[in-house]
Image (cartoon, rainbow, N blue to C red):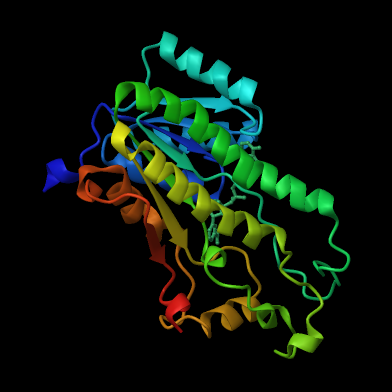
Length: 273
Ligand SMILES: NC(=O)c1ccc[n+]([C@@H]2O[C@H](COP(=O)([O-])OP(=O)(O)OC[C@H]3O[C@@H](n4cnc5c(N)ncnc54)[C@H](O)[C@@H]3O)[C@@H](O)[C@H]2O)c1
């Protein structure tokens, strides 16, 4: 069984690795002896993430790179740097995305009528174009070596419309002030198209492409928002940030060897209600 999940001598690249879940993906892969290439635009958070990972004292290599994933040239430079050091990315986790926080229920924002298209463009650029570029650059290397794994991180908002009533003080849609903006669900739904396309495009080259569809993670949401969301989840709670670790190991390893183009939905049952 251990062999099924073991990733010793493999290397995984995680985008947005300094963020809440990116770091958790790194912990997961580290626990099965996978070497890590951590990519983020936030240098200080990236340094901190590496420091925390080194505390586990695991015998793996951890490299960090400050790279903007929307910059194709920077990604090509990174791939060449890694190649020079005989490092080949066998697992790519397309995790970076922009997700506007929804804590302020007092302020009117996020309405379709006033949504500035520049935010839509920014979100598409990081969440979709960035994921595409990483797949293009690292998938190209994988296809030459005839093996690889790509994991796209979507969201329950890839398969559901946001229930805006969770952002209402009264629970009524007519009283919502702060709407979840449309950019995020557009990006996450787009991720599913990217997933299907790449899975069929590269299957014969030994590359598997799957999508993790996580539900909301308990972080710094207000009590009221936590309660509203929990009421819509059969398991009556949000996810803990470490609850996707098993899925990342499963999708990255031989344990999922006959799986491609699929969605692994982990949302406490929210999408079946
Ligand atoms: N947190 C949740 O509740 C939740 C739920 C479902 C899905 N997700 C998805 O999980 C993924 C991670 O979410 P998170 O909560 O950890 O987000 P986060 O905001 O904590 O982390 C995102 C990271 O991406 C980095 N980043 C942003 N733009 C970048 C760029 N151009 N190039 C490189 N790095 C860039 C940021 O610096 C940040 O460290 C996202 O795709 C998100 O949509 C999160």
